[in-house]
Amino acid sequence: MTTENYKAETVGLLQDLGLKEYEAGCFLALTQLSAGTAKEISELSEVPRTRVYDAVRVLESKGLVEVQHSSPQQFRAVSIEEATATLRQQYDTRIDTLQSHLEALDLQPEDKSDRMQEVWSLSGHDGIESRTHTLLEDADSEVVLLVVEEELLTEALYERLHDAVDRGVDVIIGGETDAIIAKLGTELPSVKVFETELDWLLGPASDDEVGISRLLLVDRTKLLVSSFYPDDDHDDSDEQAIFANGLENGIVVLLRRMISSGLLPLADPGDVARQRFPGQTTRTER
Image 1 (cartoon, helix red, strand yellow):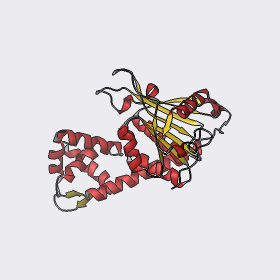
Image 2 (cartoon, helix red, strand yellow; image 1 turned 30 degrees about the vertical axis):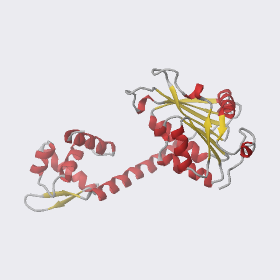
Image 3 (spheres, one colour; image 1 turned 90 degrees about the vertical axis):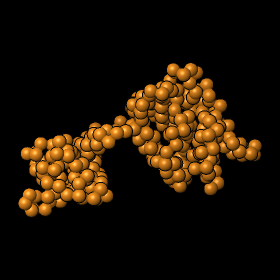
Image 4 (cartoon, one colour; image 1 turned 180 degrees about the vertical axis):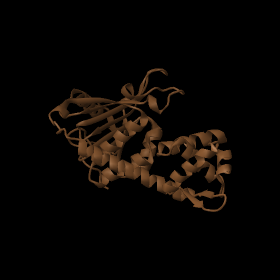
């Protein structure tokens, strides 16, 4: 990535965090100067000089810029560490405020009967990842996770699986490849790791066929299955998923039975009887 690309992306990220274009441009320019006048900021950022003063006033009010009232005035950005901490706090505050407002406006009572047979679709890696983490955080009794794509094994995922184990949740993990199984065994030594005989379900039959990337079953009632296009050109937005909920939901029942017949324990023969799924799963001694 070139310097100009870095600058453009940085300005875009600052805008995502609430700054306007001129404010973001001026702040970026000041991070490249020990201190600067409006003229110097304008020359470096290509923000019109008449607009620099307004932008800097906003940056000062946000705690991102300091002003020296000399002639001409000098401006400097706070340290990168202080700036990111300030922006993170402001972002978190906005999220908290948004959540409280949405909850205050959420006047519809939850109809639990409708939730027994629900099926929803999700698009985009970030949203699917967020739903995965939420399901793991809300797990009460059992988690079964089959992983096909190794890049899904993130620190955030491991953290939530460890938390589930600490809460007393039975965690069963299946890997589609030897590399995934080995990595899971290393990162989660207290969890029972399985190899799977569900290649017909998980693996794409051809290079251009949609393949499953993860399959998550929580408390035997909540199911998340995500898919991807296995080619070099796909990006995060290509990932798709379905989320199904309900003990009697046909999709959940079908996949639950498939999973139960497709997991092979990587354990001594004497352990197999104690690791049956579904119905007789017992937590591995930790």
